[in-house]
Amino acid sequence: MFLMKMWLSKRLKYLPETTLFISDLHLSAYQTPLQELFSAFLQGPAKQAQTIYILGDLFDVWVGQDIHAHFYDKIAIQLKKLTDKGIYIYFMAGNRDFLLQKSFLKHAGIQKIPDPTLIDLYGKPTLLTHGDKLCTQDIAYQRYRKIAQHPLTKMIFLKLPKRIRANIANKLRLKSQQYQRNQSLSILDVCQDSALSLMQQYKVKQLIHGHVHRPCFHEMRILNTKANRFVLGDWHKHASFIISTPTQISLATFSPQENIQIEKVYAFEAPVVLSSL
Image (cartoon, rainbow, N blue to C red; front, side):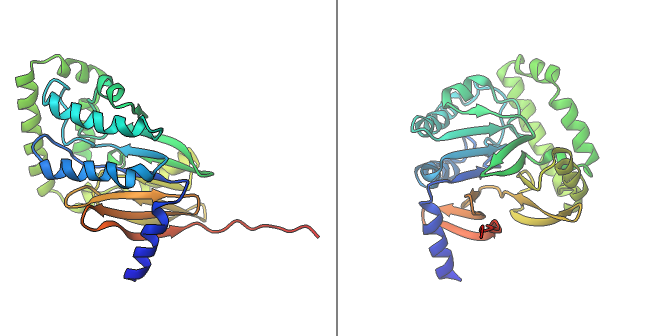
């Protein structure tokens, strides 16, 4: 098994067509090891990709670029080095960084995409979402989300003084941590029926999302047809990401010490070629 993982990591690293998906990095000005891991990821696996999708929560919190401006500038410069090399990077807002401003995106050279977004992933229609919209059993969170992410709420909040914005963000973070400790995992997780409903709405058989911090591949059925929900993990001691190529999707981790480790592989069925007689 170990030798197979090593072979797969080398094989995947140098494929000419590679798309990476990441989410839930929760970068912050106070977490230097996490910043270093992100930098190593950009210098390593990210350089081998043609396209990178960041599916939300790149930052632990965003309440304005004028708070920790030096830190945000550092991250933007690192991303810009990749986009300057011709690597496409797309950003989808999460529940922690939905206030992220256009000035940062422009500085980093990355493009914002809405939630959800439908893409053509090597010939396979694939739906991308951060994932929090699918946690429909968490009624209290969905109510909060609707208010917090309303355009009027966002506009008013960003006009508040820095000190007040920072204070509100700290209180909300503490309240969120306490709330999650008191809720069952089933309430906080994605509702399978909601995921299926969204996939049927967009007529897709593949869904990729983050938010719940539980990296996994889920096989489902839509109208008696096989479908897949690919879930990204969060970042702590290692980077969690998905590697997509024309032939397979892999759940992987990365750290400077262990390089790329393949955790799970989903290989696509080879198309049937009919030969003419």
